Image (cartoon, rainbow over all chains, first blue to last red; front, side, top):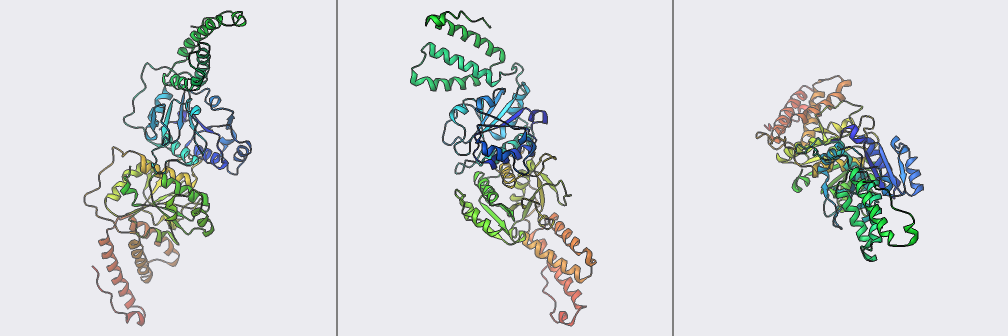
Length: 262
Length: 262
C-alpha cells in the first residue's frame, strides 16, 4: 500500500489512447485512488481536448501533460513499469504479477527517484520499442480465454492494488547497498552513445542493428545503474568513439579528444 | 482468491444501469476474471438490447438474465453483498473493506448456497430498499475527496480482488456450527408475513410502518437464519396472524387455522 508521498512519485502514462472516454476513465480512477500525475503520449489532439473538457473531469486532467514520445514521458523516471497481456509475446524483462507489484514498487521508491506505470493503446498495447524502456512488466492475472482488459478498467485495477492493498507480509526491505538509480533519460543518452559506438566500430551487420539496439536498452535497465555508473560508462564510450573516429575522416580528427569524465 | 467453482456461485447484479457501455464494461471485466453469471435489474430496454448486441460483447452477456426487481434477482442467493460509497449515508449492515471481502465470501460459500454482488445505478447507487436486501456492504477504499467510482471500473476492481488476490493469511475457517443459510426469497416471504402480523396487531403507527419494515429486513439478514429457522418462525407467525384475524372480521374467521409447520 503506497502512502500519499509515494503515490505522488508515480506517473500514470497512457500511450496513444484512441478513445477519449478511456482517458477520462483513467483520470477518474486516479482521482479515486489518490494519484495526481497523468501523462499522455502522442494523443490524437481532438480526443485529448475532448477528454480534458469533459463534464465532471477530475482536476488532475487539467494538469496532465502530453509528450511526443514515451522516452520523453519517462525521462525523469528511475523505475518504469509496463503493462499488457503477454499471451502473444514473450516477455524480455522480469514479469511481476500485479498482486506482488506493491512491495516491489515500495522498495524501488525507497531508493529515491520516480516511477511510471505505462499503459499502451487499446488495440495492440505497448510496442516492442515502448517495452524496451521498461524495467519490469506487470501482469494482471486475467482469464487466458479473455485476457485483454478495457484500458480504463486496467488502470483502475492497478491503482486499486497499489493504493489499497495492505503490505504483503513477505515484503523484503530494500537492499542496503542499492543507491538511487539513474533516470530514464540518462539511460537513453547512454544507449544512444553506445549505439553510435557500435555503428562506428561496425560491431553488427546493418540487419542486426535494430535488434541489438533493442537488447541494449533492455540490458541497461536490467543492470540498475546508478547515476555515477552512467557517467563513468558514458565517459568511457565517448573516448572509445573518439578513438574510432580518429581512424576515420580528417574532419572527425580535427575535433580533438573529449574530456575524460570518469 | 475464489476458485472457479466458487466464482460460478457468485452472481454479479447491476441495478438499473443507465449507460449501455457500462453494462458491456461490467461483462468484459467478468469475462477477464472468470465470472459467468450476470443479472440486470429493470434495465432500460433499448440500452439493454444495445449492450447485448455490441460488437465484441462477451458470450456471458447473451446468457445474462434480467429481472424486474432486486428481490427477484437475489431470490435464490444466501449471501448478498451491496456496493457503493458510504460518504453520504450511515451503513445499517456490517461494512467490509474490499481487501477483506475474499476470505469472508469464501467462508460464506463454504456453508453452501449462492452469493450476489450488487451494483447500483450510476447516479445515486443502491436505494435504501435495495440495501435492505443485503447481508453486508463492501466498501472500496477510495479517496474521500473523490469517492465515487465509475460503474465498470468498480466491477473490475471488485472482481480482481475476488479472483486474483491470494488468500489472506489471517482468514478464519468457517465456524463448524453454521449450516447452510436461508435464501433471500425465504427471508422476503417471512418478512412479508411478519409485516402483515405487525399491521394486524397494530404494532406500529402508520407513519412508522415503512421504517419498521426496513429495519425488519435488515434484522432478518443479520441473524443468518437457516432454512429450518425460517420455516419455524414462518409457522409461528402464520398462527399468530390467524389468531389476530379471529378477533377480526367474520370472513377471516371462516378460513380456519393454518396447519402447524413447526
